[in-house]
Image (cartoon, rainbow, N blue to C red; front, side):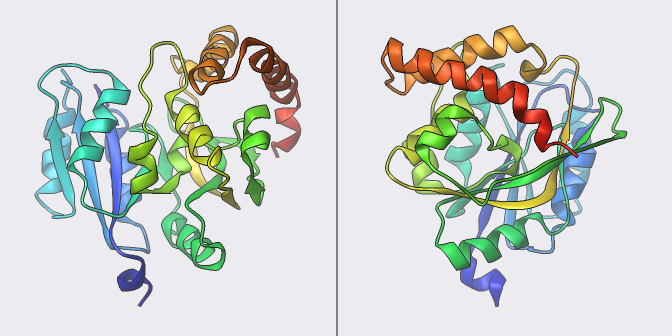
Length: 255
């Protein structure tokens, strides 16, 4: 009954040269206990075996669709391509090097039914670049408001489940900023809240080349995000200070 009532979820995976991780990501989706979804793997002109691997999986499961960009466009444009091709009323994002626990979607849907949330997220477990578990666990707060999110981005992109109409309305593309953070802030700026499932339902890969791995660059991107959503320089500076303090305290939430 849950599968019929909630409807179709469109899961978007942007993939570029992801042959080492794409199968794990896709298989974690196919193992979901909530089965009413379409999985859109958007290939950003990969030069490795990504397309071959996705085609092999798609041949066995009709819920998997391979979409390809005409030219290499970057992750934000690639996700937008997937959004434009999607058929669901809800959008979930999964990075090609991350993975989900089998009941990730089901538990988010259960929470959505209780809260009527427009945006949901989860806690995170971690793995290294080789896929080996790391003994960390990042908690997810029960609720997050716009002001709270400005101080710290607790919403992992690969854990998000969001109404498609809101995601499309606030979709952000910009150089040198955290586009996903801008989207979530813009949604919550409407007076909405994000609701978290405090369980490690996302398994996040800490890659050496990830944007989040460079603290200075991440801080600059955070500043650009604040300016993108309309904060004046003084307000952006205020929340940038919060960002740095929260970043230092973040590890207290890790187990």
